[in-house]
Length: 165
Length: 451
Image 1 (tube, each protein chain N blue to C red):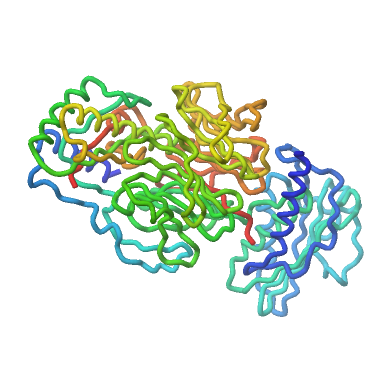
Image 2: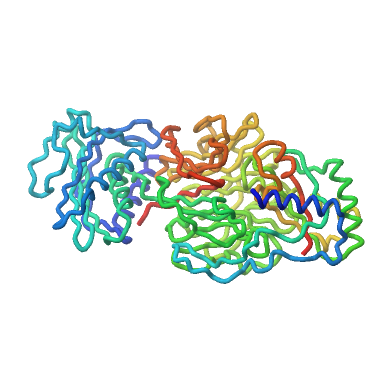
């Protein structure tokens, strides 16, 4: 819960400051293949990589979606136009992460999150961002930006985030 | 047709009973007669069981050992949904068993008179090993249905042995083992990360199976019980399929040989364990369904469309696969042949039907349906003729998973506010919550019968 709230803070802060890309390409994903931790449990496995779930730095403002929809809202288009300009002026590679709120089948939400991320990617490509610099990944219901079981949390969890790596 | 399939299923179960794994039956079922009344799967018929406290024939009896064992057998029988118990206060015959070989002859009327359909007697010997022998009687016909013996090391879990005995008592009455001695894998966030856990089917012995600090989801038991397939973001922060095997320290990537950037969302073993159906998306292409050999070779693509195609579920004969597509504009359940041909839509009510799960006996496809913003689990037969809610509850029920005997389902529900794992009988009764405490508990997968 605390972690979700923090992640949300990072997204907002990053969005407000509208960082350019340069100098900001830190990567939180390295080390996710840590050494083994023999715990003796029947299914013990290589552990380590604490923070493996925390992906790269949020560098652009997130965009939000309506329930069970992947179409870009007008507010999302405005945000993405600004994001596209930042990306075109900077360098490096961006991963667009698609997310959903907690309602519904987790597997379907992975697919919906992918569709959201793909829609964002296509729009940014249409705005002139080289496709080779944008990849996508879906997290579905995982890692909500805001903890909670009501629309006040859900509206911030149906989103696409931008990570440098 | 249906009758024949059930016979085959029963034989397969009998085969499993004879195999050994830590605990092994060293005797055998001496009588294979069926009880006077045979229930069909899904029937609400319950039987009443009178279970004696087993005779303790240990040289140095452990205090309360037979009482604890008896309590475990009784609670596993109640868990089955097949038996209700007759209180010891109602017994006309003795509460404790006599020696099985040298005791007085069985008086069936003592037990039939108090309404017991089943009578269970037994003995326990704690020596170098723990040895249990028991008999199950059909009191109406005064016929012994089962006589069986188990041995296990003194260090092993006695609760497991008691659940196993209870599962055999169920088998002697309905021809299908109970599932108290099986295990359920699931996902929990109780330790802060999203990890795979395993517990006994009655909710005891909950323990963590992965510990990589990343996101882990969609556990699926290998049909031999020796491994769990699951999706993890542990590598490159992208969903990929891993297989964890009992006793092996590191999980293996299922599709390591495939190149390219892709997302592997979920994999499910075929009932024989020889193949895996999986959902995979190549960058920007949308999720499609594939099958692959369990060793990761021989990948075959089954669906090709711009729509979302997910959630494969094998039929027990491995000839068909149920799945979900939103090609109609909303997610609906479809069925196709295992080569991808003959795709036909199965669900039509509502605008959101997902997560099909085909019962091991082939009779039902359970799925998750959203009606008026609420999610419930429904059952539909594979021909689409019968379709009804398993349970209706004002909170969301999701992710149905069948027990190996097709008499129970596990599911995830937000009844308590946060998500927990529950089990329910196929007739919608006997709902039990298995997880407690903090965190979200989701995505159950019911493991096979123990060997």
